[in-house]
Image 1: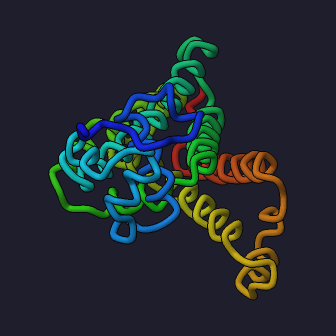
Image 2: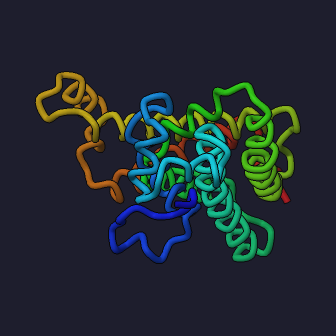
Image 3: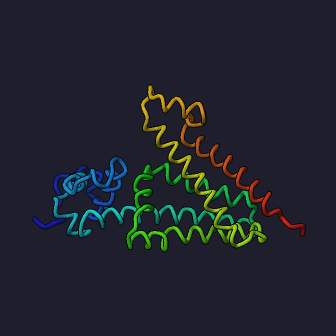
Length: 236
């Protein structure tokens, strides 16, 4: 039996390539549990393949993990970049500050919550490996640069040393509300922490679409107001 020889698999996996099936299985299992808690045998079984397939296709669990992160962040990167490009096209290269922030926040939140993959993302961002450098160079930096260009188009007077702070503070707010939603959804109905979270932010009890829309609006308003206060629009 070759490494890619499949074990009996569910009907929905038969049209997927062996590598795609392993990536799908790894994403589901790593999102559900930690990297260390998932065994190679479990990964192979989830994909409907034999144990040797992980090494054959990815040279080990660590490389499979990295490929899952890269795949997910590539999709998220492309989604955000497409949203910013579309905004610049609609506004002939002169967007408003609040529109730039709204696109960034909405695309990030929608993508992250739809895939429930924040635990894997967090681990990769906290690593200290060559893959970590690749992650930022190929996946994070292009988004930061696109946000910077879009904000400069909206507000040319933003100082270069202020720009990273505006971007980082926006993303930090998004991270907070993504984590808050994930923790809320994972908590039991009788969990005291869930009650406390709901008292602080009643919007957590809304459906996901309403939650994303409301949080996007709040972060956009607060961040745009901060930029307006620190870097007012110049009279034309």
